[in-house]
Image 1 (cartoon, rainbow, N blue to C red):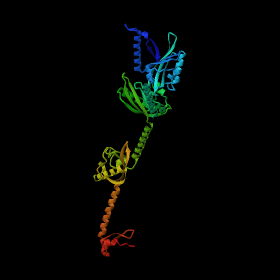
Image 2 (image 1 turned 120 degrees about the vertical axis):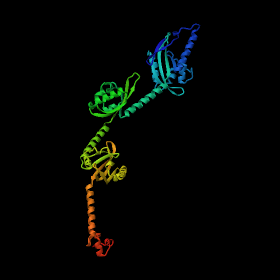
Image 3 (image 1 turned 60 degrees about the vertical axis):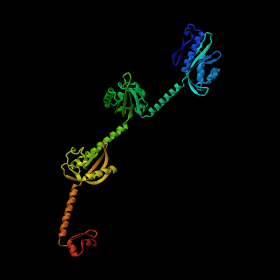
Image 4 (image 1 turned 90 degrees about the vertical axis):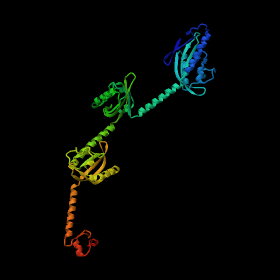
Length: 460
């Protein structure tokens, strides 16, 4: 038994002398059985055989190789005719391998493209070696296997890998895999270099790389969060700050999934997304809200805000207008609790109009103070956002004194009219257009005209 190298492995080759003859069997019978066994085995494996004499360039093909190349069995072949079955890109490689064997190279191992007699393209794995027989003749023996399906699978896998790489490169996020117990990465996508500026090798080769680049104010919180979630085998995510290669800090959204392996170890898969713009915008909104609340709190104009009709905020001016000492009697109470019952129906009508238009101009309502007294106000309302929720903001204008003054004036005018009507002397009141605005009964009696007739007369 001798051996040859194939795909880097030693492959044993059986010779006739490796098996002693069975009792009662002739050498010819034994060799024929072994030939049939070898032929069947090669057919199952899809492996053909080739023998080339370097003395006269005679070439012999096995039955399986004829079938692989789809050529009539036992049709004579030469090195030139056989090599013609190889694709133009592969033919020079095959011929060069034969030439090297002629110059004492021991083996060759190639994957070559071939085109069969029926013009079907196949991939062939060709492994050969040079042997010298006892008579001094030198021969090349080669095993040729059809690996077309294998190559198709490999190409499909390579295509999937290329598609995955394109996806990773086009994703503005860092995809990674690692050991969560040691905070070490075993894979990091190339986008890490674009987002943070560190080469991928630094992520993979520096044991404490990730921990050292976490913002000092976030480090303890992040590490404890990861350790707790890992011990519970829980998926987790959070925001934290990480230092870029240029020294600047950015905000990342860290999303982690855990997989328990067969050996009991845990592997983590995750994604990091740059959320700096979102968090910066949120901080700006919060700062704006703080400035707004400060401005509203100090405003002398009464302002209140309610969400789904429940009061969530009112400034000090509104507290004082409604008769309170602080916000406690009002917060989380329905605003209708502070409206006069006669105005409840109007409130729901105005609320519906607000939903449609987003704004209601000045209109009059009657509130009730904490002590139960009535308060006439004019209200202007608009939709707004408060603590991230749709809300309604109302501006209140106290018109109680004006309403009292109007009521007093009307009462005085009623008294004056009663006095004038009871006078015995005639009384006449003209407007700026010369028309009679008011006249008493005495004047009608003296003039002989009725009130209606007098009001039609224009005095120049």
